[in-house]
Length: 182
Image (cartoon, rainbow, N blue to C red; front, side, top):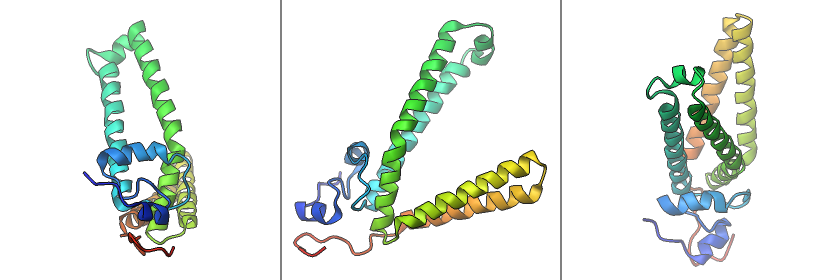
C-alpha cells in the first residue's frame, strides 16, 4: 500500500491523493470530484481504472443475474414483475453511477495529461476526433457506406491509442519533497 506523500509534494501537485495506492485512489477519485487543477500520477490513474473496471464487472454480473439466470429474459417478457423491478432498479443505479462519475473521470484525465506533460487541449482534440469517428461509423452503417465505417473506426482506434500512450507516460518534472519551486 502506498503511503501518503509529503505535504510539499501535495502542494506541488495540487492533489492530496498524488501517487495513491488502491484504496486511496478509489477514495480520491470522488474526493477530487471537480479538481481540474494539479496533477495525477500514473498509479493514481490506473488504480482508479481498476476500480472502475471492478464496478463495471459488478454491473454486468448483476445484469446477468437479472436477465440470464432461470430464463430471465423470457420471464421478464412474460410479466415477471419482481424481475422487472430489479431491472429498473439496476438501470437507475447504473445511470446514477454513470452520471456521478463523468466529471471526476474527466478531472482525473485532465490531471493525468498535465502530469505527463501534455496540455488538456489534446484530450479535447482526442474526444472531438473520436466523436467525429463515431458519427462516421453510424452514418456509414445507416447509409451502407463502408468507407465511412472504416474511416470512423480508424479515427476512434487511433485516438484511443494516442490517449492510452499519454496515460502510460511517466511523470514529467516529478515533484520532489523539499523542493520549494513550482
